[in-house]
Length: 247
Length: 247
DNA sequence: AAGCCTTTTCAGAGGGTCCTCAGAAGTTGT
DNA sequence: ACAACTTCTGAGGACCCTCTGAAAAGGCTT
Image 1: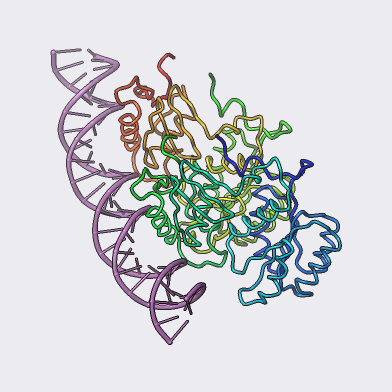
Image 2: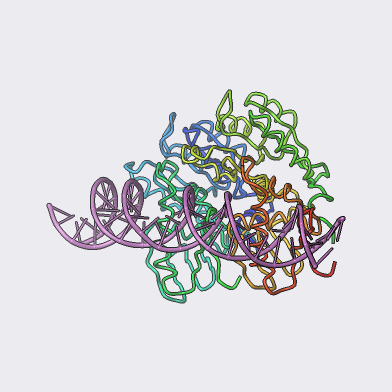
């Protein structure tokens, strides 16, 4: 019984860490993103515009690219074409404003790429990246190959189908509830502080208080622990922990 | 059976002691902190402001940094960026005032860094630092890699899950009870004076008397030793010692 | 055995954390 | 445009935790 996603870092088939290039012109954003990705075991480089993105990509040879759709010197589609020309099998995750041209991006995703809209949560980006890589057939031998099926006790989450069941009974969850539960299930038997949860599950620009975490924990409990032996436990003054009863 | 955390000092993979840089503008605080860290086997340097922190970091190459969020010449975020630029994989533990928590530390925990609020206890800082380093994958080959599982007799503590069991039975502990027990379990078979315990487990600004230690020992005994052969022993006029019965 | 000192235990006040409810504002789908 | 849902805020209140003070128990010395 050991922690799944901190110890055995993601590896490529040849044993080196998975590489990702983060391209965005907001330093705060690249800072947080690359920090979280490094923490998850990725090897990270950053770039602030299209030109340096292509140059870095050439030298770095990333497996995936996180790419802002709007860059100071060029648009996403141009950079995408450049990337495709350089790196055949690279996965691209686009970051877009909510009102941005969804049609054109929809066409992009047909090619196996994906996108998230700003503002996003880190969990969302990380999950999407894992999904991209998994579909690209990478990361065999790491924990990624079963990343679409999280299990804690009799609680099961199918990430791909976005379906959660406990004891075989399907549980309907809202978007935020689902992401909160996914974060908990990715860190079972580990106490997570409200600050940690906020930083990962809520958008980076969320201005509210940690109180929302309590509220959503309460929602989750009503749906998951209702009547049954609880999986979600409060650790007063510290945070919350998801674990099956027996230990 | 010998003491875990004083004798075999924490070592990096190359055999040298783990290095930590303490940055705070209150001399009393850096004094206490660096003293405790040295005692635990860390190699310590201190700095009183952001500029000298960066300079020292460059020369010293620490594995971890304890960093006051509010410094005379700059704020924590700026120093963090500088540190990240110089030292790729360094762990940062922030010290913040309680009301500054909500202020804007968002995103800090996402990159694996952590923070504690003033006033804090030494045990809290040390535990958090150990956690940071362990998660950063360092200190393999030292005692750190199993630092999340303390065992004394049939008493077992899982630091990650904050779960304590004796003879397989789960024992619920409050926050202070847990920290007191952790300190005892990190120093088994060693008599600890009430002053020592007070200095380590309670906040540095705690104004009360050593009487609280007696009280919390009493609480612990009720939960841990109740009915069974006692693990907590009183050494009259000296302090307390945690040890299995056989001796 | 008496007296003194240390330690343990009890009871309660006060403060803090957490849970829940109700409703406002925003979003989505029909 | 309307209904249903989702997200978040604020307030109230329950419960837990921490610490104080005092009394009881236990141990050591004389």
